[in-house]
Image (cartoon, rainbow, N blue to C red; front, side, top):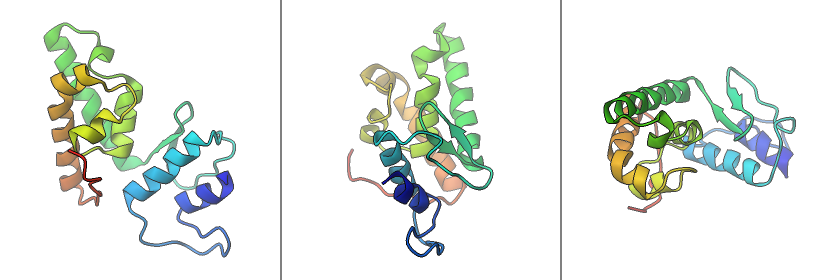
Length: 149
């Protein structure tokens, strides 16, 4: 199963070896999430290109994702300094990586991110969503709204 999902995530048909076109970023993200939930370890995952594998979470950030991660981290650093918080109180590194990867566009989707609870969502959620939505629109990315608000 891990090999099939990994092949799909890399836009390759498992049976034919031909390139798959038309997979959205959200679809690929869902495939990687399934790989993680199935416990496929990083040695099972054969990634091509200039992707970065975050081994502990098995999240792959491409170049654009890393730019978004940088913007989210910059906001977290600024707000935590202003409020006198430790940075992780405004969101852990893992939470920010998941935000950059999954790109939640609603508060409900944001709340599905590991480490984002009511406190972080209430205090910082709107700004995180604003950063993500600005990034999506500024980079002409396609995202699928899951219908949750």
